[in-house]
Length: 125
Image (cartoon, rainbow, N blue to C red; front, side, top):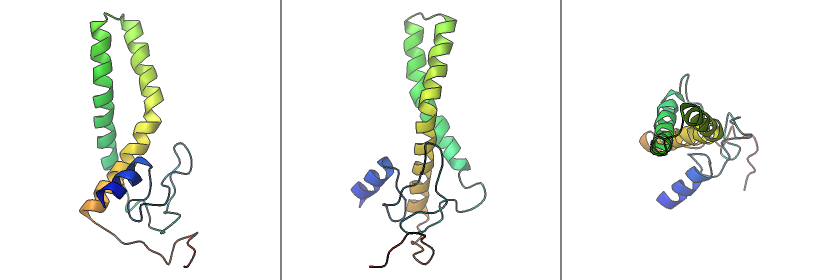
């Protein structure tokens, strides 16, 4: 079961059925799972905790880069440009994975079942 969850997390799939895509574009999230119909946004402010995950991931990624640039004696301009470019490149990835990671952690802590009656594209069988 943990392998399936890890695979679903890495592929950014639904935390309930582990199959449906969470995102329909680079930053656009589906409101519900296209497979099981579960609503991703459980309540107002649901994704606030994913911000903390994003801050942590960003910190863990940017600190080694900053330390490396420091030891290279990079100028303030080079340092700033390198960190800003790294942030701009990684921001969409961090945004997506922080939300998916939060949804999977929440599913483990407070499980819910798929809502097959409201699944938009669900085929019987």
